[in-house]
Image 1 (tube, rainbow, N blue to C red):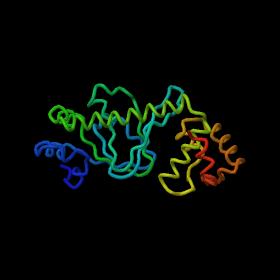
Image 2 (cartoon, rainbow, N blue to C red):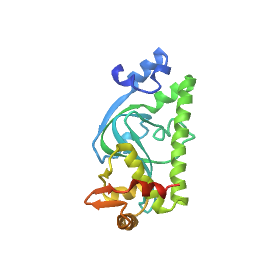
Image 3 (cartoon, rainbow, N blue to C red):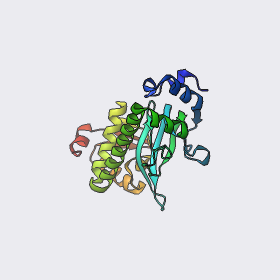
Image 4 (cartoon, helix red, strand yellow):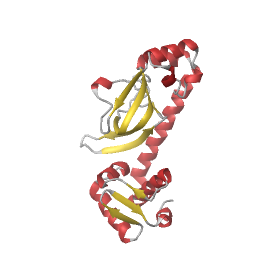
Length: 221
């Protein structure tokens, strides 16, 4: 049984009845992963509802050619409904999850969570709201890939990182940036050179320094 100290952090904990809380505490498991580990291995199949206690996870799709499309990230305090396809038959999107930094998750088994959804209307509403939120993220990513110019996508990525950290330095390699903006490393390298020539950024080894925030904002609608 997982201590209530951990399960009480679940966003839907206060919506559960006493017996439902006991079922969650008895069934839940805590798992730890090192940076670079894939969560969707055979031993992790159908984890159920995943809650990130610490760390960060990247959720992505992989094509037959091996190209990755980053859909969204799950950080501390976030839940992942797309890992619960065995809980909700409406979810058929096959995604992969890779750990971005050392991560600890709390997972409620699929069987337990499915039973709770059937008996608890508030939990069912929470689940569908979360799935809608994730689907919106996926649709937005697809819109960016299909319709946004690449310079706009790059600028938006830099500005998002700046807003998240408050720092003008972004510590990422070109390969990592390519995964985030869903493009090839060569395309990213060309755009970085262009931005650097324009004086908007400065490129270092594994580091991008934002030099002209205002110019980057001007190319993002």
